[in-house]
Image 1 (cartoon, rainbow, N blue to C red):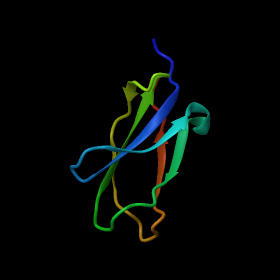
Image 2: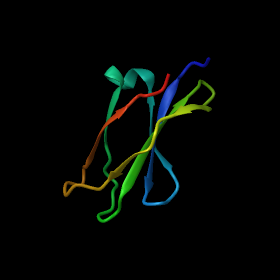
Image 3: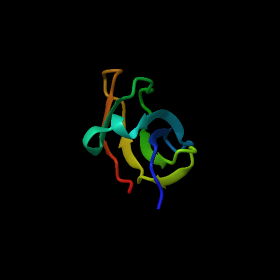
Length: 88
């Protein structure tokens, strides 16, 4: 068993590598749902998201399934909703 200290939200564009877009303490994800406003999206690019659970030393102890594809909305503050905390 392990203790989750925080969560890391990762994003990849198309078939690229995942990059960290934010880290959140367990208390910052009420009811197990994270709503994240992603403001740096390029039009015409498809994005995929994943969430990792990290222990107190920053090691990944669990990862969510990839979610997507998500394409930017016309509004530059496109919302990526309902990435549920699916870690133990």
